[in-house]
Length: 204
Image (cartoon, rainbow, N blue to C red; front, side, top):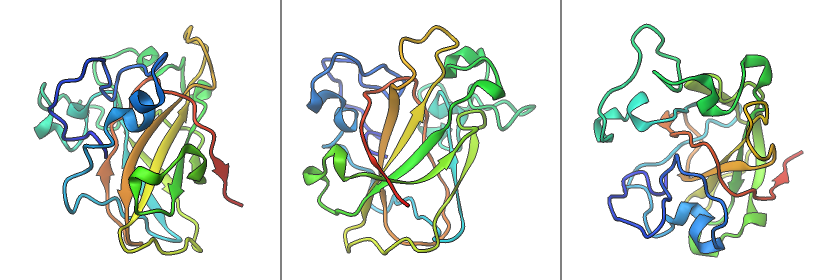
């Protein structure tokens, strides 16, 4: 994930859990982390025709990647699928399982990340109960074309509920990560609570 390993200080709060509102395009696009790509070899591989399992959480410490979290391991051993241990469910903007609005994965077939624009992303998978559980599955279409040599760039989008008093139901979260081949691999995507709305096409 872009910015997943970032340690630099910014003049504004662009942490994965920070709202990205009233920012310039360069500030919210890729969370301002375009210059901070994943480490070499950190590729999220999509299994064409199978299921891709992601980890979604309010804090990196609640995922398998807790070792690089400032707060260490905060996973709940009694509820390992809890995306926000120790927090009320309002933290991920819902009143319950019947109130979640879902998430989507989108892909851009361009290995030049600096050239990618919002309209280049096409949604290829959705999960309607996202972000209720830490481990969240997305069905990957069997006829996904291969990525270019340098890999594709993917994005994760979330529509949250307004039931908890949030200002808009169309604000969505976007994470950007590299994707390359079509075999099964699991990588944590740490959920945040707000971001800028981005229009994307929907695959048919």
